[in-house]
Amino acid sequence: MSKDFSFDIVSNFDPQEMANALDQTKREIMNRYDFKGSNSSIDFSESRTELILVADSEYKLKALIDVLSSKMVGRNLSLKILDLTSPEEDTIGGMVRKRIKLVKGLDQEKAKKITKIIRDSYPKAKAIIQGETVRVMGPKKDELQAIMSLIRSSNLDFPIQFENYR
Image (cartoon, rainbow, N blue to C red; front, side, top):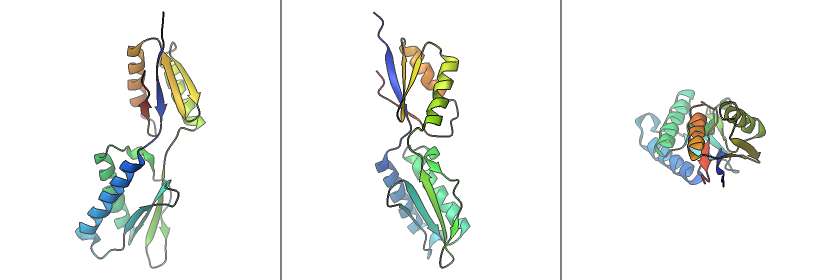
């Protein structure tokens, strides 16, 4: 009797860990010498789908992003969840604002990219797109672990996690 083993591939992040990273970033900004007397801030948007960074200059904005990145790495959050492609905006009072979208969920294009990688290397494994997840099934646990390693080493431009390994 052959029983298939499976796992799910998702693109997600822990919002509480992100909130903790933001809190640590805010505390470090308050204590850093180069931010003394600055009106720099970092917060979630109303919908909690993006971050809003405000700084006195582009230099301080980049420093703010660097501090946030280091705190995210410290909390095991992938830097790929930050979509840094949006341009900086000038605001009233000479401040600079940047909206950073948080990447969450696999759209059809990303899911198809993952299934193609799996099909090309492991034709016996089945990869099925189920909404915002990709379910991978196979007869051998070793094969599924090899698929996980393959996906991790694929250098995708979006974050991935593995769940429900059975």
